Length: 190
Image (cartoon, rainbow, N blue to C red):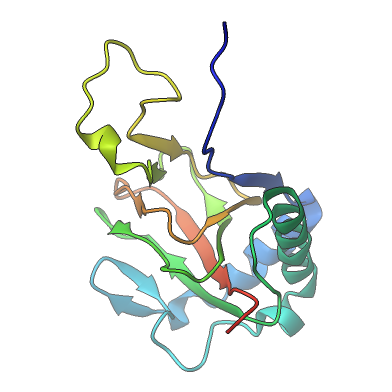
């Protein structure tokens, strides 16, 4: 007898070349003071002018995102296209900075790229989209009944996931470093 995974949730995990990661970190850190303070983090989410024109100023990174998107779409069958790309930079540098539980609606494929991250930086936590798991009391934790799964931030790492998946960023201690680029590739029929 064996169990089958009926409705798995795809998550792509990929690491960029170290030299590109170092170049991106150097460029982004040089402009972090331009990010605006929002409630629980520094970000350009609501700003007209982004920290960088990602496609032109950080082209090797953007191309890596597109490679990830293509692999995600091919392997998952999800509809998302490069032409519907939105992004923003986030920096969690103050004690307690975090980002509460949220999702990116029906944007298609969402992503997180860690520009830099110290070992003690807050994890990104993903929540099981099967809400019945909140009401089940298992005798042991398995991949079939977990309510959440955390990813430790790692410089140069890219995560892609369906936009509807709820996730949060846990708070970090004062001395932690965590800078990310969050983004969405929208569905084909917009």
